[in-house]
Image (cartoon, rainbow, N blue to C red; front, side):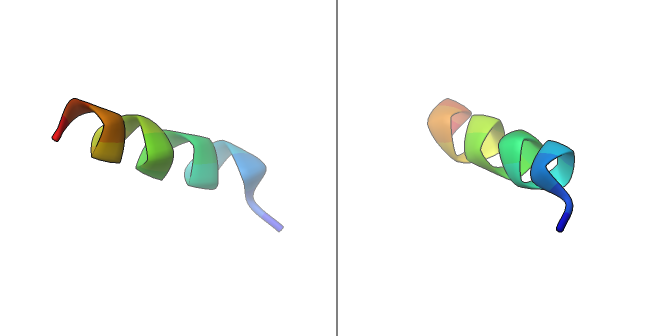
Length: 16
Protein backbone atom coordinates (compact mmCIF):
# COMPACT_ATOMS: atom_id res chain seq x y z
CA UNK A 1 0.00 0.00 0.00
CA UNK A 2 1.64 3.24 -1.15
CA UNK A 3 -0.24 5.96 0.68
CA UNK A 4 2.46 8.44 -0.30
CA UNK A 5 1.92 7.72 -3.98
CA UNK A 6 -1.84 7.87 -3.53
CA UNK A 7 -1.52 11.21 -1.76
CA UNK A 8 0.57 12.50 -4.66
CA UNK A 9 -2.07 11.36 -7.14
CA UNK A 10 -4.81 13.05 -5.13
CA UNK A 11 -2.79 16.26 -5.03
CA UNK A 12 -2.29 16.05 -8.79
CA UNK A 13 -6.04 15.66 -9.30
CA UNK A 14 -6.63 18.58 -6.96
CA UNK A 15 -4.39 20.71 -9.17
CA UNK A 16 -6.28 19.67 -12.31
